[in-house]
Image 1: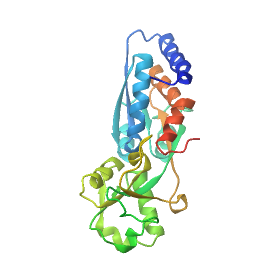
Image 2: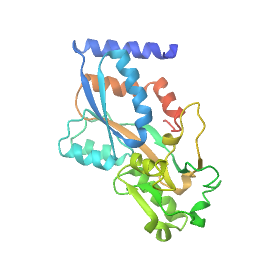
Image 3: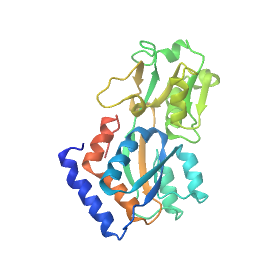
Image 4: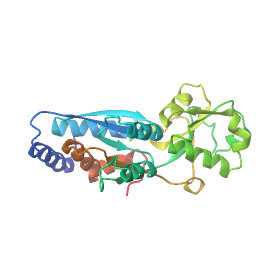
Length: 251
């Protein structure tokens, strides 16, 4: 069931798509930064229910998606975890001019499934009572870059870098911790926060002053009416409210 306020938005999207001449249901392919997986799954399901079209979601690191798009990957839209890559794609002619927009500002947390372990200010980092600390690859994933910035800001990067295990993306970094292969890790807040449910384990929400803001942008890669409608749906007030429920800030 959808909130009553959302129904006009969904109906208008359905009308837009039908008016575009798309008599048959279409499937669009959307490349998505892994941190946004939990949210966009729900948004895609709502869009599909309203329009009859399908949204195929392909998750991965922003850097890897960027390289794939430059090499001709058949994506219709791209939800990155930064501003840099969508901007570069637009400048290089791989994205439609004027379609780029900020859909979320992410937050990182130091998290462990173990209760009472992290400390109110992440003191476990200085104590060093762990073998492995998971982060996303800083060269591919903006959340990994943010994690490295936090460790450098606390003067711990050189000391701890031999204990750092790098996931290709933030989803893999989360799995390292969730599976017990790493005792703790820097993950996206959205990965441990679910609307209506308390965060399990222990965590430290990292102050924004310790890392570059993780502003996340989306961009249209093909002039496809269904993809345009999906991006418009993500911009709606109701969709943005859902994004905030998962711990993101929105414009």
